[in-house]
Length: 433
Length: 179
Image 1: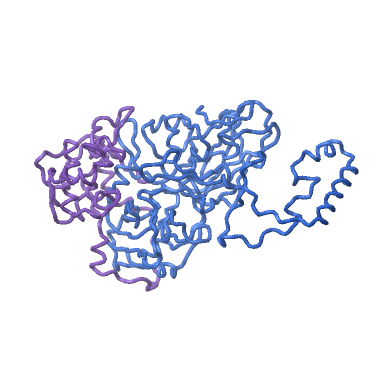
Image 2: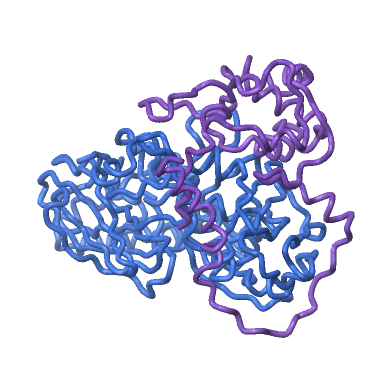
């Protein structure tokens, strides 16, 4: 979305209808009359140079009925929003990786399903829901084979939660990235999920006393697997089939995914086909060789599940240009795997002075939270930052604090404060301060 | 036993207890009676995971030499000669680099369990036809990958008994955080 710059490439959303000659002459008379009557020189002088659909002109789209019902019947965004899309890797990847959410173009705290970030490990499978099965076995009294019809009969819940890839913002460990907030932090999205409480399904199977961990396995070509601690499974885990009111999209795990609120993205196993209850973690490739955090001493942290308290200003953000001094609202997103966002603070001077931002409510647990802060830009250089604090007391660290603790060899769980430099010419860039 | 190893052993033994901590006992509810019991054959066919202690490893065996032949036809195109110069993640080398400024994470330098190789190769490799290798072939490719890392000799053969006993160089390199 860019309302300011006329985009010559933007298609007309609907084909213009032919105008009747009588109506056209009426419009011409109207224009002359309004010109003659205009007492305000600025308007009268510029009227013929203004775009044809702004006052005093009558917009073309008011002069005839619009199109009928649009096709296809599953509605699409306005053609003028064609630039608001997920971002594919810059170079065609040899192996499937990720697409990123356009955080700079979105409002509120819900990511539209077509813009929800993707990360998959062997492509997106096409799964016939009628043939999809979830097998639950291992340390249970009654192993279960559940169809989607079975799962849809369980009591359901809907809850809003974010998902963030544990590798989100990873390049910032090393150096400030040159891209937009989408490039830097776009492996983050939020949605309202609908599904069955995993605790209810485990109750149906009956856990044996030695049950401690659950292996979750996807039906993709990676047969993606992670070990889930039983405490999490019984706390707030969902077997989700719905996302923002409709069935999951294929790239989000259609027809069934595991949802572990606040846990790193890859553990929310998509295309879920099997849950095996065991007594120890299964030490899969994804929790040993990958998704472990290499520390400066050469040791690695393992089973770092929760995503830390984090926030980022999305407006304004890198690669945008402020079009003049004066009032504008600073806005962004805050989230924490530990719980609810308690407070977001904004700094205009690189972290010397902090002021409390307003939060859009209701603020939900382990969900994206929109914050807002009024700002009058004087035209001077500024360093904008935001800092999240969650209700467990976790404070988003500075980059220096994070790198001091975790070093620069880790690629996961980067949650440091983001700094955007606003230059006196209005250009916004990513800087490390 | 070093202090680090002692702490790690303590953490690992406490891991099972931790996983259940903070579970409120759920109120007993009536079963809903949904779903079916899978047959033994259905469970056997889908129960493909292999645990660190070797649980889940199938019968079969494969040698380094057999593995090299399979590697040349099924793996080399992506992983490169000797697992070092491909477009896919590097498999070999890197030992001793983990604390350096340019760590190289491979099976030999990083992976804590050899059994994970069997599990992963069977479930996800080759990328274009996962779950297509026979148990003998998976054991063989596992053996060859370990050989490329200097962990197995040229004449080694792997099976369900020997694979879990392999001491991986970075076996003690992980600290469970569990939160």
